[in-house]
Length: 416
Image (cartoon, rainbow, N blue to C red; front, side):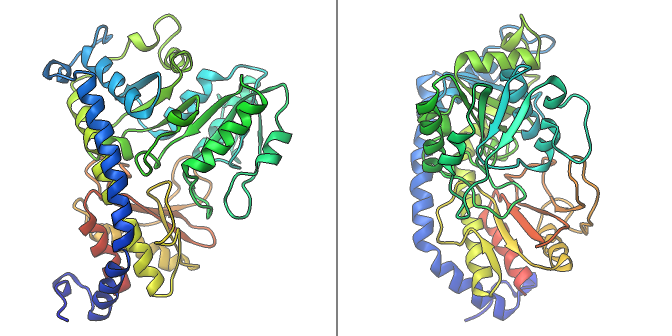
């Protein structure tokens, strides 16, 4: 067969392999499209039932009192997430900030936080006071204890070990849905629900909090819809649909979300304050587009897994596995190959395609990190990007892709 990608630096061998991968993934794409349809219908119904209107696209400044657009977006988002209340703000600049704010809002001195998914990723470990460098202002500085339970070897929750560690001090059980910088798989809804049911079955007063980053719209339901008390994430990841320029969210029980709002703003003000600054349109449109964009991300990840597996390169998850997040890992066992692959991803980016990524001391991480991120919004991982810490086994964490074709081209160039 002819090679239509030869003008883009793709060898005939890589094109042939990509064709085989494209054939293999067709049944998986059908499942992704079904999930997209379910999620898109839910999003459309939320906008319709909450009577979203043109005036809600307006802006406020200053304190942001009576911002009808911000309030309506939060109503819509709460409905989509299966939550009582949502706090969706452009002023939250990262997923770590959203999750940190969630934990500071619901925990008090003397409480204990128990992680059901092992050690959180590096930047959140700093929030907890667990990183190599001691940061002033971490949860441990406020007298909040921490304990953790590792997942089983197959990546499923160790329910018995978790329940054995629940004592009178445990206030919050924390779940990280995505894999972070680890080799374990992402948790799926059945995994998370098993934790929620077990914890609430032992003590109904324990708050189950979910780090939902990278996981939104990858399945047909969100954690609050099947029992999580609160969850948090970033609007420049999945739920912003590649359109939101910044922002984060907290969603869940009304009383808990308001506690977080008071932490972020001030007691007595809470969710009443926070101007939209003209970004209501981008936030609303991004939320509307999110199920479609996440499906594109998943298709790119599945193709990458299939193509690399056919080439004899280790990946996780396999292209056949069910997914709980948009992250695809490629295990290189070689730092130079990791850096080289990130370079191929960068070369297929719409922004800074001519730039060569180099490992650097990224704030909040203990190892040097190489990152390819030629994105329209800085740090937006719903856009196609790839990064990885320079430590064995030298794993590339690939995520995002507003358009599937960009991911496909980068994978083919790398294989060439």
